[in-house]
Length: 266
Image (cartoon, rainbow, N blue to C red):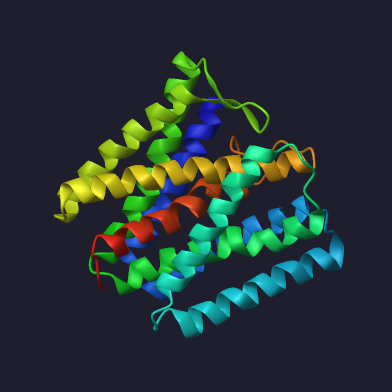
């Protein structure tokens, strides 16, 4: 299982890294968008939608992506979309505190666009609208991946204190600390390679890694709401696409807000 998980991760990471570095922004938007639509399909499963209703949910989401890409990428939509996303993730954090209250399925369906749309838009926006956009886009991906790897390695080795046992019993505070430490290291290395201010960028990376934990826990909460372990089975060793992008969905708006606050501009 671990070998399969590692191989899948390396293939995905290599393919996505190559696409971000060498593809134009419109192609990057489509590539990330395909992953996101796979996540949307799985999210529809968390609402118990089936058949035509599930296809309609996916189609509406795809139409929203096209509209945001057409009208928003060339305009100053980044800040309002970031603000809406941060507000949503703040509400999600409150939801984690009151779980295991039952979440109505219509509310789950409504939450889907708030979870997934902003991150897709912001990843595409960062790539095409900021100086060193491809590097910044890769940075948030590697920060989130590092947080995930660090949490797994430290948590599985030394983890004792449960982080959120009612939502995700396997996660520990020790794992969170390990993930944040590795994410901080990756953020520092990225700041050196991109030649940006070290301290602010590392702080942004740590904040984004903290956001990634909330994203992971939130999707776990929605999965537990319908008693499923994995959102899908498409990725060998990893489960579904949603299981791989949940952390990134929450970390990206935090990262974007940090860049805005630190004065990064296009």
